[in-house]
Length: 189
Image 1 (cartoon, rainbow, N blue to C red):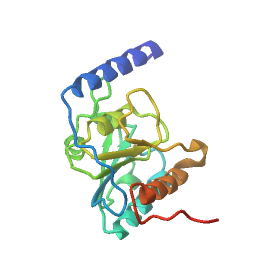
Image 2: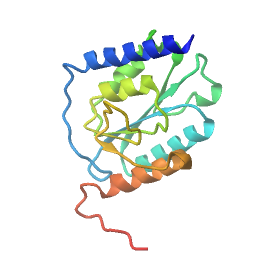
Image 3: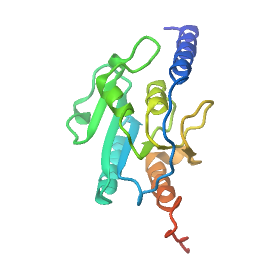
Image 4: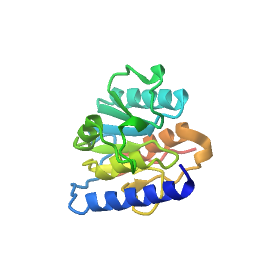
C-alpha cells in the first residue's frame, strides 16, 4: 500500500474514532497505587524484552495486591510463540483489525469495557489500534507518555523515549506512587 492510501486510512480511522466517542462517557477519578484495586496495561508487542519488562511490572503491581490485566497488540498477522500463554495477558494482532485499523476482537471489547481504576499505556510509539483501545476504555484514570491531538490520557508522562520502556515503567511507578497520596514523601538524594 502506498503512503497516500495509508494517510487516507489513518484519517478515516481518526474520524471513525471521533464519531465513536461522541456519546462515550466515563467516570474520571485520580487513583494511585495505594487507592487503586484494578489496573489495565496496554502495550505494543514489538520485542520480547519489552514484553518481559511489562510482565515484571505486572508482577510488581500484583505484589501490591492489585488485580492486573495486560492487553498486547502485535502489529503482525501471526503471533510468535513466545508471546503466548502468559497469565492475565490478552493479545490481538493485525489480523483482528478492520481496514482502517479499528480492533474487532472480543478480547479488546472486554478489556475496553472493564472498569479499571488505572489504565497504563506502555507505548513509546503511536499505534492506532492501541489508541482506539485507550480512547474507548472505561478506565477512570489513564496514564501514558504519548502526546498527540485528541490524546485520551489523563496523565501524560514526559520522558526521554530513547531510554526505553524500562524508564517509562520507572516513571509510571514513581508518579503513581506520589500522585494524590497524602502519605507520600519526597525522596531525598
